[in-house]
Image 1 (cartoon, rainbow, N blue to C red):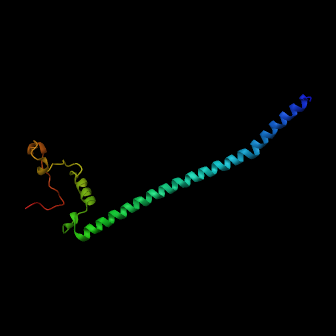
Image 2 (cartoon, rainbow, N blue to C red; image 1 turned 90 degrees about the vertical axis):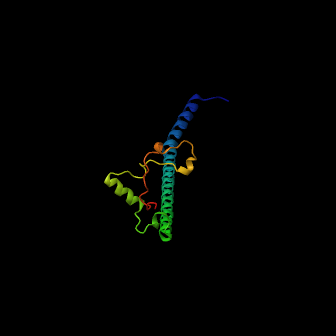
Length: 137
């Protein structure tokens, strides 16, 4: 069997041309279609996650609204007062007047919880009454 070098050279050139044409007209378009589909799938997954988070927020707000409505109806907690001020309105009023809000007030430990472990009245600082509850008689 004899090897013809010119024929081998033509086969190598033809193979290179075939690879170029397949890459140019078949592989690249298919690769582009696959990448577009992957991008579309990723976008739809992100949109679905955002929708799920929004639904969870809405459900949480519904639970809070139902709990507030139940507390108002049964006159529990803040709503036991004949003319209650909702906490968000109370904080807004305090901020507009330049007074401390509940987050800025120093927390004072209960005398019962200290159990005589060296908690003195001087160490606690001033006592601040709760504005939403009537004063003790």
